[in-house]
Image (cartoon, rainbow, N blue to C red; front, side, top):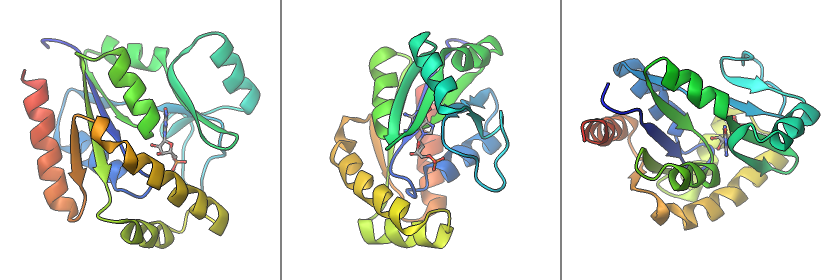
Length: 189
Ligand code: 5GP
């Protein structure tokens, strides 16, 4: 491996970034998923240390105090999410590039900390109406957290231009192809 790199996918909740990240992981070798830490509760089928490192709010705060995060955000009120330094080192230690599925502000923090090692890709929904439909279909949110996510999406879309690339996710197969092309170009430079 030439150089260990960081591949950031960010975008509003429901933009399809998780699907893109999962397809890249399926289609390419030498890339590992960065498991984030969070203080939110696990959803039905989520597994600790696979989907997230689920921490109590106190455990999360202790790790902030001990400077254990590369980045962290209070993504929604009282719900913290962050990338542990130990996670990036674990993956780099395995000789792999790291791929992230994180919120827009966290994504930009990674880009700012590691400007030369990072490609930051913003996944944009075609419009807010489509985003709302996708979130409703997913049935993971109640009405208030859905509103919270839509409100945050508007803010996130406003800073999309700070990313290296924007993928407008209209048709998932086309988006997968263009994401893989960008990642390949980046890893081969
Ligand atoms: P969810 O609750 O739907 O799993 O995630 C909510 C949001 O938090 C998503 O936009 C997700 O990408 C983001 N997120 C997940 N992990 C991290 C992280 O480590 N850092 C930051 N800043 N955001 C994260």
